[in-house]
Amino acid sequence: MASLSTNASGQHRVFFFDAKGVRLSIWLGKIPKKRAVTFADNVGFVAQAKHLGQPLNQVQTTWLAELSDANYRKLVRVGLVEPRHQSKRQNPTGPTLAQFIDQYTASRKDVKPATQTAYGICRAKLVEFFGESRPLVCITALDADNFRANCRGEKLSENYTRTLIKNAKLFFKAAVKGKLISENPFAGHKTTIFSRPERMEFVDLDRSRKVLAACPNAEWKAIFALCRFGGLRAPSEVLKLRWDGIDWERGRILVHSPKTEHHEGGEFRTIPLFPELRDALSELDLATPQGGEFVIKPRPQGGKSNLRTTFEKIVRKAGVKPWGKPFQNLRSSRETELLETYPIHVVTTWLGNTPKVAMESYLQVRDSDFDKAILTQILTQRTPVAVGGDSQTEPLEAENPLIPAGTQGAANGRDQIDCPVRTRT
Image (tube, one colour):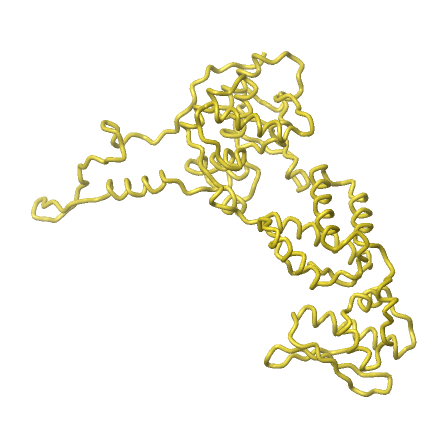
């Protein structure tokens, strides 16, 4: 077997014994520790196979095929391998990148159509960069770095780039598992999607009333209410909502969540039938013929573009400036709003996410939060008053400019949209 040594400057060196017991070494220079360990492990297996006169297995064969010419020559110099013939280098065995991705995506019968679409987009980007006939085994970690750099050069957003890298990493991980390659060239690349605060916007009650009033029918009022006051994901959860999932007597709604159904217990969640939801759903119930299964009529192809395009027209009709990420910001606004009243574990259970996801991607800091902080400071100011010779304090009686006259000390109740309540018969 081989061993790895690292000097003070971070340069790596691999030591191994040849068939005669002579200790030899290979300088790797300053490379990532994980890559150096992989190199040393493979050198050990190659040296052992040569000593015992055994053929190399698929992992080491693939590793040798993937090695750059410079690193391969280091193995030649210590007698581990024969010089590489250019013809073999140009015609490695195994599938091309495009062939493997096609085989892999065809085998994934368990993923949703949207995921298959994302796989197809990633395949197109990889094949465009590497070429249709590029062998899978010839794609190195440096190639992966260059692919990411090319995404930056095309001015793709960081989150979009990370999504591409995430799927590319998934493809090559499967290739490693199938022993077609020895290591994932995209390993180590960051793929976590991060929130963009500049695209988050709190949709307050004033704008919500205007948009609700501009909805053309009871169905669109229900869609908007489910997103803004129920915090449902659109279109997936809105279009999956069933009439038999609404418990009018207990005041609860059973929500089917396609996004989290692959997690244990994540297929369904229950939310309160908030007053705003009861009003909008009762109105739709009255206008819907009996016997319907889904609350919202199914849209073609999942209704993504249909819902968003129509919704933006409604927002403009209401005289409200459209905001970015329209449905996610409605959900974000509701989660932020609910946390003023309920504990975070309750709210995240209702919304179907985790406290970590809520903190990173949904919860917002609003101007009203700063106003409340200032108000609290004003109302808690005290002045010393001498009573019976002792210095005590009592609150200042001061008009607060942030509260309308005559409402000082009023409870901070949440406004509700005034709609008649109807029940399904």
